[in-house]
Image 1: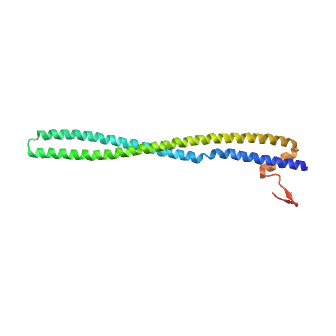
Image 2: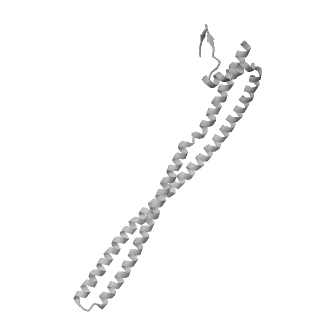
Image 3: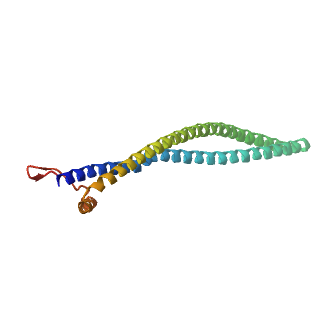
Length: 200
């Protein structure tokens, strides 16, 4: 009976090792979750920046179109100025030209500010895309390491399973069935007894 107990204790040690390997195998891929979340966050930021950049560039183009139309209006006002017959017509056409020029100047200043903002945004996008590339590379490297670790753990687990089968063959089948039943219900089936007291 003592031999059988020692075999069951060895079996329990092997089972514990197999369980630890199983937990480690499942836990390894979860280590990448924070890095993948950071990557997704960065990609979302870049997508938002690109969207805002596209909107800003569309606004800039609209403003440039408005400037072109106002320059056309200035030319038309200058034409009125050259054909003005009365002092009143001349003053009105002159005021119109001045107002159009002022409006063009203000729009051009706004467009210049927007162009500076566009360049800054492009630089930020480029920096974020570099960060994304670096993070993807690190995640890829870490995934490869994790796959190698998982493969090593699975090999170790296979060896332990083979060893468990060998030990299980030497245990009395009825005792092995009872051991398996207790392990499923309680997790531990064999514990030490010291001075008649169970240490489990």
